[in-house]
Every structure is written in C-alpha cells, then in structure tokens.
Length: 355
Image (cartoon, rainbow, N blue to C red; front, top):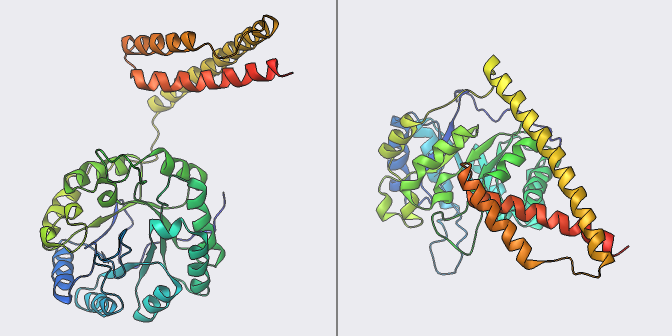
C-alpha cells in the first residue's frame, strides 16, 4: 500500500515519541476551554484538542457548542501558543475550521465508516495543506480504514496519520472499545511510514485504564497519543469517566517507558534467526498434517463417511489445550490455532469428496 506522505510535525513540536495531543472531550464553555488549555500548556503540551461538534449515539444529549467554540480555540492559540485541533464530520465543518485557522483536523470513527461522508470531506479539503488524522471505523474493518485514508490522500493531502481508538462491540467488559491491537499492527505493516496515534480514552472508557493503554501503545511503537483531559473531569458534559486532569495526565506521561524502535543487537538477530527456523519447521509440519488430512478425506470418500466427526474434533481441542498448558502456552490460544487448522483440514477434505 503506497500513500504519498509527508511529516505531520508542526514547527516547535519536538520530533520524539510520543507526540501528545490533549484537551477535553468537548468544548463546553470558554472558561472551561481556557482553564484546561492553560493548565496543559504549563505541563509543556503543544497541541490542544476539543470537540466542537459531538456526534452522540442518541438525540437529546450534548452535541457540542458548534461554531462558537472555534473562537475559543482561536483564543487558546493566541493565549498559550498551543496548536489547536478538532473533529470534522461534514464539508461545512471543514470550511468553518479552515476559516478559523484550526491547525489539525481529525475524522471520527462514525465518519470513517461512511465512504460518502469521507469523500465529501476529501473534496472540501482539496487544495489545502493541513494535517488530517483519521480514526479507525467503529467496526474492525482495516480496508475501510485504509480506504478513508486513501480518499484524503487522493485529494492531495500528504500530512496524514491514523488514530487507533478501538472497535465497538456488543459485549463491553473491560474496554469501552476493544483495542484489537492486531489491526493497527497490520496497518503499520501495510503502510510503514504512516504515523499511528493511540486514543486510550476511547479504548478504555475509564480513566484508570489510560496509563496501561498508553504504555501498550508505546511498546508497540505507536507515534503518539491523543488523550482527553479536562480541568474538572467529574463535571464534564460528555464522557466524564474517561477524562483526566492535566496534573494526572502529566503524571501518566512521566511514567511512560519509551523503548528503542530500531536498534538491533547481535543477540537479537540470533534470536530472530531461531524464530525463523521455528517458523520454517512449523510450516513443514503443517504441510505434513494437511497431507495426512487429505488422505483421511480420501478414506472417508471411499467409505461414504461424513467429513465432520464432532467427537474427534472435540477430543483434539481438549487434548491440545491441555498439552498447551503443560508446555506453558495459553490453552485458549492453542484452541484457536487448532480451530483454524481444523477449518483448513475440512476445506481440503471437502475438495476431495466433491471431486
């Protein structure tokens, strides 16, 4: 996947991990915006965020102050010297933000999931040079995420980043939105030079989860963090439970361990060679197992047997799961692996029986 990309760094923002964007979920009042911004600026934050238009799941909730809030962001920029950013969901939002001199725009998860809305925003941005950050869609669809980025890139914008804010699920247990880290990891593999920013506020949904999620993002080599911070979180008009004070945010950031991304030592190279050797052996053993599965398929065809033998399948899953525990490997992981292996074995046997 090739996108034409340029650096998202703005003058005066240090080129280091993590790049931090912080501010309240919503701009509520001019006083709340300015109070939060000044506290964040005192902590060394360079980029301020606040939602002006807030897409709510149900009508009747606080849906943002609208255009009036843009004047407050302009004042933040003037008073503190911070860059300012907000979310856009329509062409009208884009025009209003550009008119107000907003420095960074981001596109929310609901909008990313809608190709018509994304194209409308892309058309509104043609001829403009402003950093645009695209959140993942609400559903775990990598192609939809990439498609949204491509639409903005095709409009001529090269200063792009992705925001990982987790994926919606019906069964909400620990997280508000499941992180499903493998999806942004695959995005990084597909588009290696695309900056990825983590949104721990929306993934966690609870302020006590922000610190561990920030650390996980840094351990995975993410470039930045966008974190909701409010001068009085408990009184916030939206998403109160996932916002932290500027003081707490500063504490979280100071505790982060930032590991080196690219340095490869001789010992690490040797260990990677061992991994490659293990993978090669796994591939050979899998090929051997599929060969035996095909022979079983031939036997079943000759003896007019059904492919799926439920008792045998359950026995394999239980036995392999137990073996995994004895070997220090999580039983659920082992079961998932063997479910996939069984699925492929059934597919190959179906081909033989249906010839």
